[in-house]
Length: 103
Image 1 (cartoon, rainbow, N blue to C red):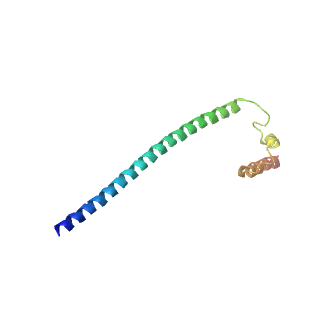
Image 2: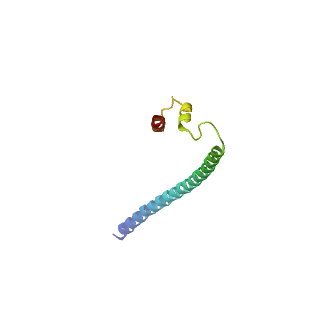
Image 3: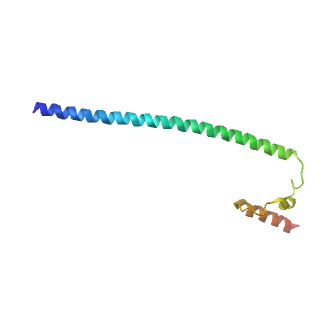
């Protein structure tokens, strides 16, 4: 009976050891994934910062220039791409029409 008890305790301990080892491996994998995600988030943040800087530079450059249509939506209607079907086109076209109708 003592031998059976020792055998059962040994089997249970071995099973627990396997579970702990598997948990350790899984935690290592999670740690690697977390580090990779943090690295990617840092890269994405840097891209966002650089994109904002470029956009700000473009806006500042455009605002500093004078060109036909800059402050006149009616003139800008001439340069719209009629083939473009994006969602904002309808809003822009309606705004242009309302401005032209107000004249």
